[in-house]
Amino acid sequence: MAHPSIVILTGAGISAESGLGTFRDEGGLWAQHRIEDVATPEGFARNPQLVVDFYNARRAQAAEATPNAAHAALARLQTEHPGDVMLVTQNVDDLHEKAGSPNVVHMHGALNSALCGACDHRWPAPLQMAVGDVCPACAQPRARPDIVWFGEIPYHMDAIERALSQADIFAAIGTSGNVYPAAGFVQLAAHVGALTVEMNLDPSETVALFEDTRPGKASETVPAWVDSILAN
Ligand code: NAD
Ligand code: ZN
Image (cartoon, rainbow, N blue to C red; front, side, top):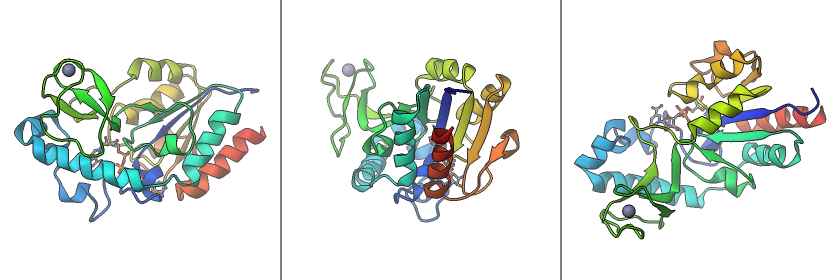
């Protein structure tokens, strides 16, 4: 295949070596909070201060973090591969952008974006958001982090499914395969005959659905995989 179309899905594991904890990490931000409290619309309605503080802490942490060799390798693939490469991330950090990735599809939103709960307007989030921040478009005090919470619909699903339906290669990197719809992408890709590759530290929940599995740290497995694609 001369110029295969590639779809890549990344998760928290790709940012682990940059110091941003995964959801399972003991002692990390997630370990100190219940998902229902900080990652659902109901949690935000109950205690907006707790939720805004939680994402302020994550935003501050992400602002200090630097991309690792895995992010850099994917940016190289996106700029050097002559075929289509769609990079989809479940991560809300901006390490792919910092590594130079030209296009990143943030299906679960982004820490550096604010969203108006009244009119859906988006704007760049300040480093520290406050409860009741005013929307620059409609002037309502309804700002919230632009994060897709449990029970909300992920962003850009039409574009992602279109790319998956035309993919020759699908790679999942640093994701546990627990959270749908992202965990189902491998099945969509396999259905159209794409080669499926998993690069994860531990086997994910969906490892059996992948043809090629490359266990290990993303900073090692991803650059090697990118080299193999660009060499073809
Ligand atoms: P995750 O924390 O569930 O899984 C991370 C995966 O990365 C693990 O399978 C781990 O083995 C792997 N990993 C760790 N270090 C690695 C390394 N150096 N190299 C390669 N792999 C490594 O994260 P996820 O899959 O991105 O979670 C999906 C979505 O779930 C998130 O975007 C978030 O919206 C949501 N979420 C999940 C939880 C949860 O408990 N799973 C909690 C809150 C939110
Ligand atoms: Zn508004």
